[in-house]
Length: 339
Image (cartoon, rainbow, N blue to C red; front, side):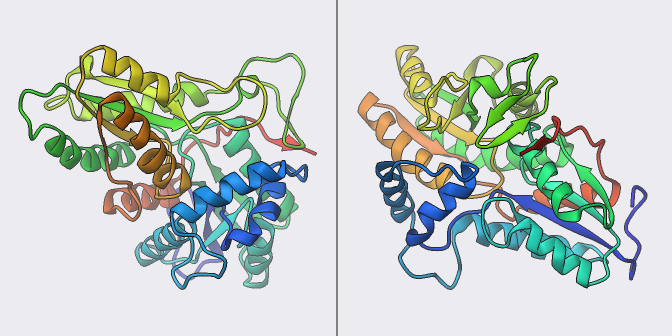
């Protein structure tokens, strides 16, 4: 598979994503899966139900499905059009579950898969757990080539830059306004990426020892996108923050978006263009956290906030996935984990 997927072979591509509930009533069950069976307090469940409701999730399933599932399936459909092999989608925290999809692949006679994690930046809490979930499901029954850590893929960078350009054009419609760009990625608990002599527990899983490049990977994606936009974006006008810090105890990595917006206002910026380079499609951390919560924060500060469009089914993103499917990338997932 390193030199390409052969037509009519017993090889397949498996796209991996976190998953999201299909209806509001599944939130409690979904959160138990996210937290490794521990569950969360009822007020947290209700808070998240309100957030998901604000972006369109209802008590009954929609024909289109929730945003994350819809766009991930669309990405798979577009990739399937490019390849002479099956393309499957497996979710770690919801349907279609990775283990169920692997069972389907086994029944279909698949003997080798290339698994692509749809979280480009490498980390033990996302990529590492995806890798472990695939390993458990496959249980040695066929060969797996796991693609991890593609935060610097040229087509990914071009895709983000392409989405940023129209947002910057809108932001600069008033020529005298100062405009900043704020790149973001999802925050993670500080303890999960710090060097540790002993394994770290995370949501019922034990994370492997070793360095975790997540924060550096996220900032490198941002740097490369800014570099791709150097003709229209000054290096002095872009910043980086981690968003969507969790509700659980303990510190999460920052700076936060809220603090960054306050800083940008204090520095004299009137408009901020935000681009979440840690996400590949619309979902709750984009449609609620940015479009609703951060928009309100910006408004209260007297800032205009504009979000660059998500990649979703961008042709350049599909180019990147096609390249990874055909040629792979060094398997450098930040360790695996075990229960």
